[in-house]
Image (tube, rainbow, N blue to C red; front, side, top):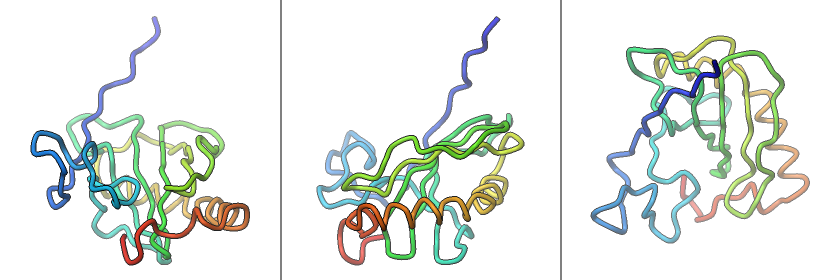
Length: 152
């Protein structure tokens, strides 16, 4: 019998400002907000000038087999990350657009159960992310610039 993917919980940035008091900031973001606004950065995730943020919370009693995150490049531009436990090649899920330098899929060898697990796995794919970033910068230079100067 096929299994249904387990549900996920979004981790909301408590510091993000919503334009609607009844909606979280990732749904009602300010007009000039960067991609993935409303989701927090992962403390201690900085490596080689890249920082990672979390969308689906990896923490909990049960290991997570899939989830979403994002990366902020040294210039402040952003890209999405979709991950799953298992074996497979890195893929382009969405090409670069005006808001981000793409969305990329990765496989991690084991399920994730903590921020530390997620950071370790994200650091392991950083060389591939850097290559995706360089390709985006070469093919569409505007996608690797932050939407708002100084906004990260």
